[in-house]
Image (tube, rainbow, N blue to C red; front, side, top):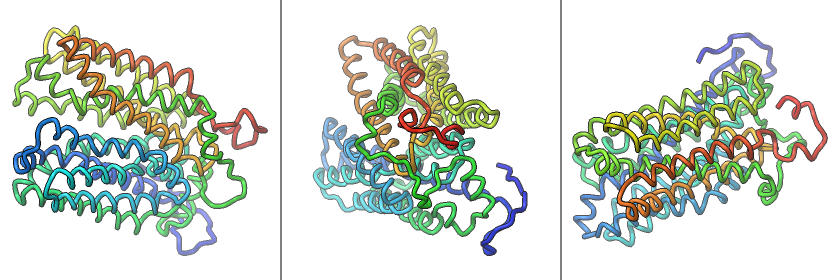
Length: 448
């Protein structure tokens, strides 16, 4: 990222006088935090074959243990968002990472299923603030024309974490055993939390940030967290009165139904429907996920490019979201694929298209928030929809496969839901601060 070097006058001589790029360091920290979160979610799946043999855990109970974190993660989204708005991402994110890292390391001490289940449930509670706090940090550190790329950068941590987790945890298990793997992955989070507390402050308070960068962020629409007496944040319960909030919630249910297919049933689909061997999975199975990482960056860059060109914020956000959600519907075309290679191409296009929409979707809670005090709460509502879609996806896909004996019905269902997501973002979500139609227009409103 090239940075402007215009010199400015400042009343704080200890600050640099050139526009710094500390905001991109913050985005990198957010991406790293999400990578660690995904490693700590996935480490049990890598260690499960060894753990299940040692403790005699049945396949059914293994499934319960592997998914346990997701239930508390979804349940605690709304409280986590509220806390992040009240206390700020610096405190909430740091406490959350320390919490879940200790829970991760604590798995090394388990002696049975009960303690393992309890720690995985606690892990989900600890990870609940990750996404709401990340959105809050982006709202504080980035102007409107860079929010989507910043969101795409930290959002790519999910795909990167999922890709890194398996080989990393497997290598640690080989070297130090499965208990050592949980200690090591837990330690990663503690190191990150220390770095976060050392580096993160709001732009005005961060010691490395020049006044030029602070002005660039605030003048560009960054949500200034300094008290001005003009904060227009809504009471928490009032957020649910707005159709846009329900659109963010329901749109993410539809969109994430597809994403969780790739996390859960995708390998089984390749084996059962496309005849992949285990070696085929090892060689080619990661292709859609790798392509999806680039989709994340492309969607964020495209949305911000439109903003810089003077396109309205609504169109700049909605266009990549609609293109991406429509494109993700190509998952249904795999039904007609004449070969496994063509099926993998359709799946890769689908997953990459879904990721192309991600940056814009992650930016929406900031764009529609009426004030700095609502960003994390709105994101938490949106992410609750994401988790509902994620929880329903493996259940519904499994039911349809059991009933029909094939993956045709699940692929069609996912394609239809992707079209539904596009319609919701196009016609239900309004990219403007909530309540703007019910209060006098201001210069700030006009800029949106």
